[in-house]
Length: 276
Image (cartoon, rainbow, N blue to C red; front, side, top):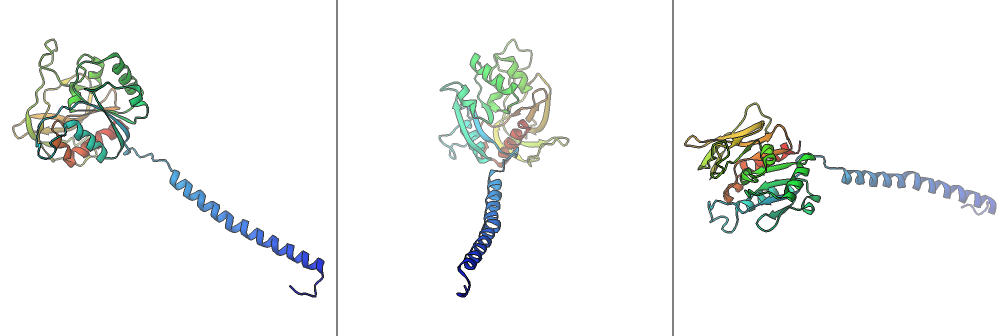
C-alpha cells in the first residue's frame, strides 16, 4: 500500500478490500460447495421405488425335500433351496421360520416386505390365521411355493386365496379328485397372452415333483404351464384374480432344482406380480 496515503484512507481501502474478498468467498465458493453437498445428498437419498426390490423376506417353511442329487447339496433341503434362490435374486435378508420348530409371530412380520409359504402342515392355528389374514387383507405380497399348495387343509379361506390347491389322499369328504405328483422333468410354456416377464418359455426343468390335478376353487390368472415327456400337464405359475397380492409357484420340491436359472427367473416374476 502506498506509504504516502493518510491513515484514514488506508483503513478505508483495507475495509473495501476485505469486503470484496468476503463477498467472493461466500458468494461463489461457499454456494458451490453447498450446492455440491446438496446434490450428493439428494443422489444418495433418492428412494428406490423399483418393484424388483425384494426387501426383507419371511420364509415360513418346512424341510419338505425330495432327495434328488445329494452329491451337490448333501445336507440341504428344498427349503434351503428357496432361501438361496431368494438371496440370489435380491432379498436384503431372509428370515427362515422353520415350522417344525415354531410358529409364525407378529414380530416376524413387523419389518417384512414379503411373506413366502413353503410348508405342507395341514393344521392352522388361530394365531397363524389371524396373522396371515391381516397380512393378505392389507394387500401385502404373499407367494406360496410347492409344498404350500397343500398347507392348511382345515382353512378354506387360505385355499380360496390360492385358487388351486393340493387335495390330500385322505380328504375323503373333498369332492375334488385326489392330486398327483409324478416325478419327472418338464418343459415350461409361458402363456402367449400373459405379461409374465421371465424369459423361461421352452426351458426344461430337471426331475422334480410335478403337482397335477390340483383342485380349482377360485378364479386364477395363469402365466406358466408345463408338460412332461410322458404327457403330464401342470400349471406352474399363477395368481389369484380375487386376491392379486397372492401368487403361486408349483415346482420346487428337489433342492437341486433351485440351482436352475429358470427357477430363479420364475420366482422373481411371481414375486413381482404379488407386489404390483
